[in-house]
Image (cartoon, rainbow, N blue to C red):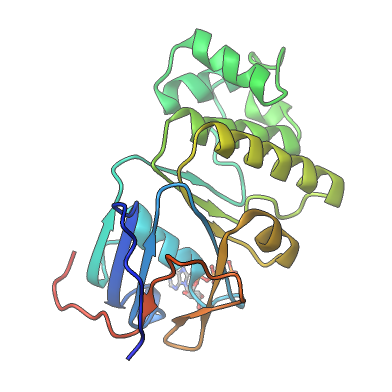
Length: 226
Ligand SMILES: Nc1ncnc2c1ncn2[C@@H]1O[C@H](COP(=O)(O)OP(=O)(O)OP(=O)(O)O)[C@@H](O)[C@H]1O
């Protein structure tokens, strides 16, 4: 029996699955995320981290179990998924459903002032990542899912991006599930770190930083299909 302390506040995510992902790559696992906490998710390549994010995001419904997630979810992918035929300003305004004035404010806030009329292909990877992060926060998410958002950046740029993330989340707290392979990112950004391992994959606690709200169990299996 795995003991757990149930968070007092309503979680932004309550996941309790028996199996899921391509070929049933994910095994029984349960996970809760509280509003305002950042949880890192690590594990070897191919173990199922992205598959888990896809279930949480509602992009993959072919799993056995239950996933209750906050309504407002934003995703930040490895590659900034921007609309190539829209300007930076339009990418913000259209996708986050904000006015162009608000979008202009966001561009300034994330260091992209003056670049609003550029198309994504005219921005550097770092600038595209800033835009992608701004867009995610501008949509006012309760739950933010990030899939290796700082990968392939040089260390200084990755650090700048983490500065930006810390500033944005301090101003607009939400629950965040951050997939990363980089320990310095987990140590800097996450309150606790979980690791996916094995096949089918299980969630295990990765380090000693687990807080009082840690809730993880391989016992929480349900039979309903979401
Ligand atoms: N569309 C797909 N069709 C079939 N199998 C897939 C598909 N996408 C992923 N897989 C397989 O599912 C498994 C889990 O993939 P997933 O992308 O979730 O792993 P990951 O932990 O995110 O890996 P990485 O760290 O390399 O991004 C892998 O074995 C992968 O080959």
